[in-house]
Image (cartoon, rainbow over all chains, first blue to last red; front, side):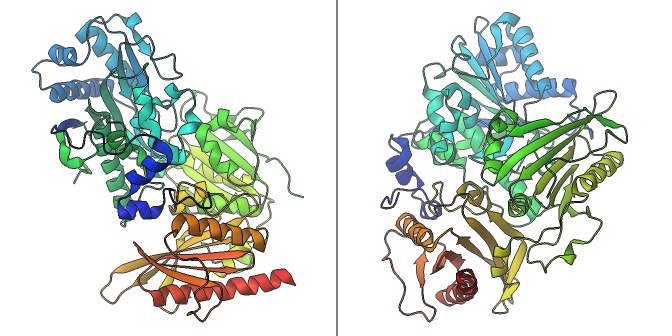
Length: 295
Length: 315
């Protein structure tokens, strides 16, 4: 390490040289080959209902199902729910659901709501809906994936929501911590995964705005929302904005996520998975407006 | 000698625990908590005892995690990662009966159903899955049982380098003091680099803290202090070389002959002035200073204190 000037440091974030440094150190792929120049707007929906979770943290499945319906309607722009789901998955798809099991797990009620919609609205048979979180073999037989993390920070990667949700598919998760978390986007391009993600659906009902590493209830709050999109980087970028604004609101002073989440911009500029630029993201909000945290 | 287990009641309120604890050590910590285990291994971790208290209907339990660390400093370090929450009493004796404190004098912090505490070589987390007035009472009572008969250790001696204020204007943010031995923890408190550019390991002790200066106009300005005690002066010198190469590689190495305090140097970088000083096994830094004078004043303070400590070490 002694004579290596290509180490990512705090100074890179101030100078705006993160990409150049990462490209020269861990990435092994050029920076800025991604979507930044593509003239496309990514839609991210934010659907909230104040009553989806009660004071005892119990989730109302009926309200949640309505929120899910509103999410797919607003994301696809379709008039009815069957048409909306048909934009995302087909009846003959083998759909892998990929929730997060750790730290701030995805609510099982959300997984159930998606399953019910796939069966009822799309006509997918139950045997073709797979719980696909886990090792490399899990996504192999899936023709479609629905990425379903819960919104949270992570103490080794800064944010541990969308891009990191496929880490187990790498077969070597510990290889993607610290500086190498910049490479998390490459997992979305392995043959078992590439092009299969039809929907990114983030459980933001009860997010965790600090990084853990273990849950601290002081940093969980009732956002009572679902975030969704088909561009994983855009969804993660909006997730990041919510976490940052909540942290600032909690402390009343800047409270940056530390270490900085380098995987988000790298997913855009090194792996071309989507956009990390807020100006290229259209946020479509529906429902409860209070403390939206997207100012 | 400190007992290597805790005595917890079988029943507390409506909660009852299983007969025996789950024992977790460094060989199986990742099975228990995945990547979170890195935090405890970054300190001197011995083992963890886990107790689950449940109610008859298996709802809304209380999780008790008692981390047995190798030193009281390690247990303090875990608490110092976050000074937020309500300070609560867990010892029969008030903590100020130990030496005067630079860090917040509290030994236990509660918030949202979670109690975190430091009692000698123990760091513990006691968490009610749902907070009620009954669960809070039970959680605090369990905290007192964990701390019972444990020594009230002094905070790490390295913290004595910190002053409550410097040059009248700069005040210590006690809630931003952290003690650690690993760059993973440093990056969680104050990001410098994803790599270990200070050669931190279990043989080092390190402290970071923020100082704040409130201007007449009411604007707050913060600077960040960081100092590390290495096992030997040679290791400190080597670490400074690694840091310089990684963080200041475009700047010339060496000690600035223009400063009054020996062994120091100052650099203007993107986020303000950075200063460092080396005294034997001690390495000190200040980041984000508004000007060279403030960096020099703060480094001089660290330098004097580390030199004093180095002299004490040499006796």
